[in-house]
Length: 218
Image (cartoon, rainbow, N blue to C red; front, top):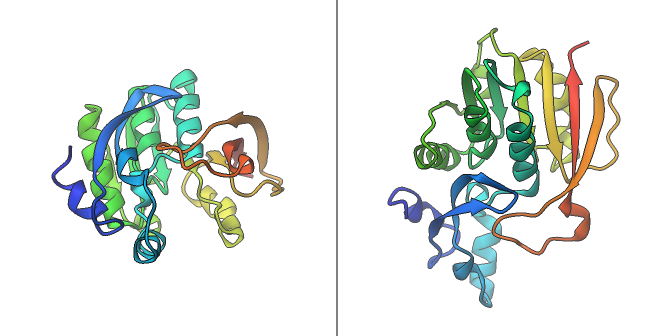
């Protein structure tokens, strides 16, 4: 267990804790995630409110992250010897996969400071190293070859990122399970893959299907 992450997860639920868990669809990667035992019980109203208001997004591997990590490990040519920017990194699952697949350098970016602590712990767990950033717009590196992002379109207002991403990299690899109907001239649909969150939240079937897109700077 992680001494750094357990105090953070208790902000969401007082008796929750993290444990190292291999991903069922991507067993090459293990992450410190909320232990399912702690979540497998009835919650009172105060606990439900706390979970809702203080969700530790970094303590779950969302379906899109698992799919994108698996895709990169199965297709290492996407990242091998390249500089990668992982936007909305969360647990760091895709950043870890990119390093394992041979990326030259990875910058993992997330506005959640707890997520960056999670990334650092998960990087150690997987014996990889990458850089951390809490501000996308503070990144001035012009050597980035590919921006990767998973489950960042949970709000339609975030669709503006589809254009913003090209300010940072000429190519984008995007996985999303939330918005099914976006159309953008610079993004091409690649595949649709079934997955789930780890630990499994038994989400609606519509959120268990992940779309993969490739974006190219115009």
